[in-house]
Amino acid sequence: MAGGVGAVGICAVVIASSARQFWPNAVLVLGSLLVLGIVWRFGRGLSVAAVVIVAGLCQVPGLLHAPITSTDAYRYVWDGRVQLSGHSPYAHVPLDDSLAQLRDPKLFPGLSPADRSGITGIPANAAQQPVDDVRTRINRPAVPTIYPPVAEAYFTVVALVTPWSAGTLGLQIAAALLAIALTWLLAVQNPRWAALWGWSPIVALEAGNAAHIDVLAALLIAAAVVVTARRPKLAAVLLGAAGSVKLLPLLLLPAFRTRRPIVAIGTFIASYLPHVLAVGTLVLGFLPGYLDQEGFEDGSSRSAILALLLPPGPRQLAAAVLALALAALAFHRTRRDPIALTCCWLYGAALLIATPTYPWYGLPLIALAALARRPEWLAVPLASYVAYAGFGHDTRQGLSYLGAAVIVVITITIRHRMVAKSGLTAAPLRANTVGRDKTHRPRDVGRTR
Image (cartoon, rainbow, N blue to C red; front, side, top):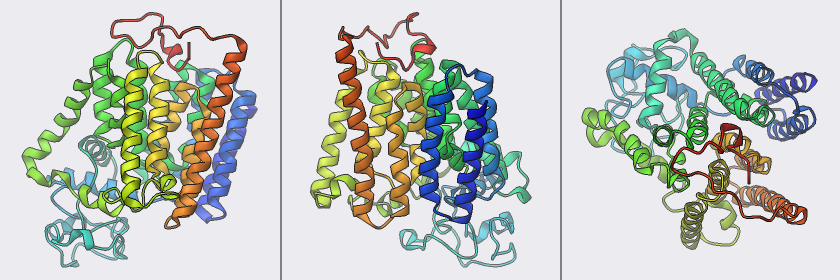
């Protein structure tokens, strides 16, 4: 268990470095590479229990600090509290004086229930409201929520069992438990590869510490991939639920072409129906405004790799063409390749095209890389931390993601050449069939054939 002790120590160092802002991104990248080396060196012969226990210990350092990488968890707490009070976070903003009774010093250190913010309802100029307000730790406090219904249900359940005085701790513990649960799910397939997720400093930072909802999306995506051969309808429901946590998982629909994609879409739509009945068109919350602010509408701060060569207009067109081409390729390859492999490169390629500057978006990719046994894709979430540190510097963001893309391409090329030289050139066995396939056991979910 020397490797496990080392992984726990590295996670603790990464958390401490991030909390003190001492070269946090450099320490995180170095720590992640060290953990990858530990898994490679000591991973053989690991038991499921050992991997899960170490994963649990890796989450502990993050629980000892308030969220570091973002303030999203404070919004999660608020949304859950609002729903428990019988109101909708799609129809109210955190600064709304009609919800003043829900304020507490943890979320609103500068605004008591007796104080007035001057805001009632949703401001007409919500998109022009400042991102931060010194009176509250909640980001974008003058706009409604952007999170889909399954995420909101999760916030509500956690809020139900978390006292107000605990602040974000309940969500941090919940995210840590989800990360551990996903470690177990992956370890049942292969303990060594599960350690890529469970022992990752990125997971420790973004789950147990920052409590990002992306860990729930990662769990649902991984569960969908694992059960897809035997329970395709259940897999589709899980994928639809993942899309209702964070919209990005819906990009995997082409890989589920034989796995009831209509069921996945139906699950996603059905999750919105209760909220539509309650608040009508307000169910979109601030999502359209958020996408505009984040550059998804005009492409101004997205597709940073393409931005190295193209202006915003052509860049959007090129990104759309690339996305459609990759979706078509995934649709074509899904009958030939293990679904874990297809989902891994499809999700990773989507991140390389969009180049989001929020590194926690890469959490599902780490889980998929473990399932598909493709560690080269870990370069993408690592690159996102470099991009996050250089937010506003498009060239630096583009070069960081370009470096990740080069690593992925070189590794894939080397692997293909090694396979060709070894003489393993026979056509792959048929996989991902609609019917029950006893040869496609859970342990084979990420194995090429």
